[in-house]
Length: 176
Image (cartoon, rainbow, N blue to C red; front, side):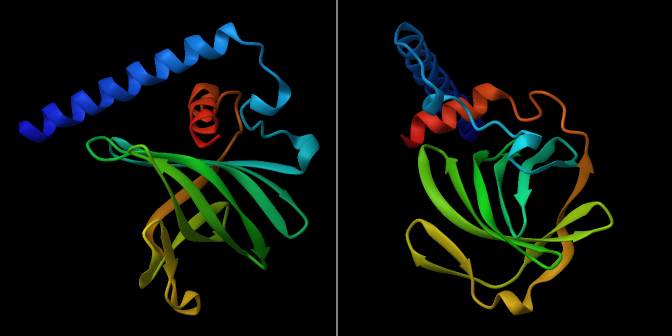
């Protein structure tokens, strides 16, 4: 019960902080650089992926160009920490190898993420990890990752606001 109260208080504090930031931003003139990441086909090949695990979900919007990709990812968990952020890296054969720059509980950190593309799914790579510093998680040996045992994201249509623009904007304002 005490944990629930703490979570509710933290959520309210973040929401209140966000509302204050939003109202300040609305009073100032916005420009192109401050707008949320837009995933459009004109930037490259556009794709979206979704995993729903009970009350939890993971969403990923990607733009791939040749052997590179960039996108936005949102881990939304029912009773634990959520995270939002950018996912960027290289496409090596059928594997996405990238860094997830994430915001969770007011802290920016970096997590190495590998996904295997198989049958219109992205299968998250799992393996032994190490912490080169306080804000970074990397795989100890990426060649020994296993796929399909963790989160499997299904390819879905990229509908408008797949990952809500407000979430992207909040992330971008926070990391500025």
